[in-house]
Length: 307
Image (cartoon, rainbow, N blue to C red):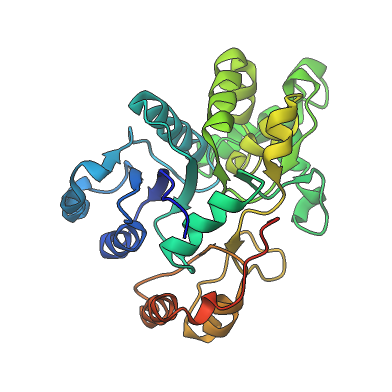
């Protein structure tokens, strides 16, 4: 067993306070600090039980984090800035949702991060990717305007997309000749990558502005920054694997809810975390996972250290 690594967990939550409480309890290894973002559209009072974690928990500046909106990127950036402002030298930063759950023990997770030759675990692929994303392999996210699902937002986007056919200055182009990359919203990075991301965002406001009109930019924003870097140290730290277990069927945009029917696949998975779970649908699966981790049923095999 290796020395405990200092971990910052960013957790984006919007529902199921008791499920979030359980997640934090499971991750609490006395070497973890939690930076929790609660969607501004829900009552913070519902999450008052989180005060049990004392100074281990930090509430991130809240925004309305609607699905497919830039707000999800904003919430994540707020958390990254909060981590930087804390001046703590974390070894690793893990982005989770309130409906994620670890499928390995804290000891196994700690040892894995300690021994891996990589420190940035993120899924990425060039856009377009026709196998992964419908609608032109995701290219529409980059060349079409998107502001939201409300009537006035849809109307504005349709109008701009139409006018862009006649007025080239309205055509959407990714700034700085960047090569676009997409992938899962959920990742793990180190402090070096955190500093790089925040520095890039500060120096490139046009990149941020561009993604305020992008559909689901949380699946593009960070991949594109990291994979376009010329920083060799950063590039060497990246592996194309976010260590998450998720099930997508027929290229749908939302992962399947995991239940006890998924248990056997979960415990033999090489992933560290899984999503997504829902207390209102199945709580037994989390009990099964906890029992497996405590009895080390799913820890008999060695994780691939190069991953």
